[in-house]
Amino acid sequence: MKVVLKQDVKSIGKKDELHEVSDGYARNYLLPRGLAVAADAAAVNEVRTKAAAVEHHAAQELAAAQALAKKINGQTVTLKAKAGQGGRLFGSVTAKDIAAALGQKVGESIDKRKIVMDGDIKNFGSYQIEVKIYPKVAAKLTVKVEE
Image 1: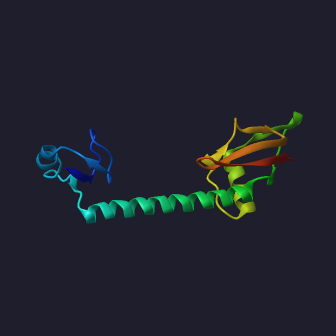
Image 2 (image 1 turned 135 degrees about the horizontal axis):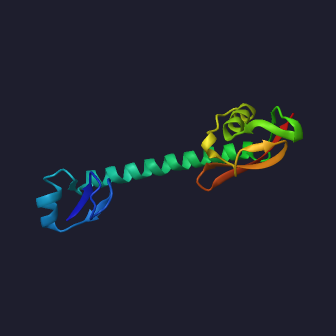
Image 3 (image 1 turned 30 degrees about the vertical axis):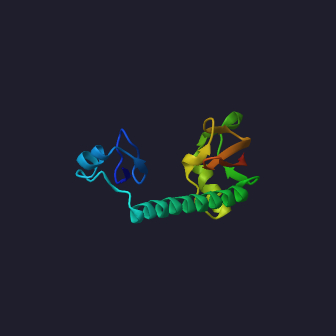
């Protein structure tokens, strides 16, 4: 019997998936507990519609991420910092600082967790930083720390 799962079922599959199960298992376990419904035309159509909607939203998010990556790629962000003797900064330049400066420059908010750094920047100079915007979508920018 074909069923559409309404919840995740450990031995069968995930929610909103179409599966073939034995008649007894469907009638005695899945259907009475509300874990699945029989796969009639309406249920199958609903599953296909939901899958198409999820795919459409993923494509929109990917396009937006690629557009943002184009804006960020090659940008140079200049940050001012105070330092003591020897050029060592008081404190450090963190991903939060870079995200704020980049957000102002690009015009969109950037999450600090998407900025990939080996550690905080503690000296003056120029650094290459990667921003992972979306899975498989990344951009590189230059961060200049000046006095």
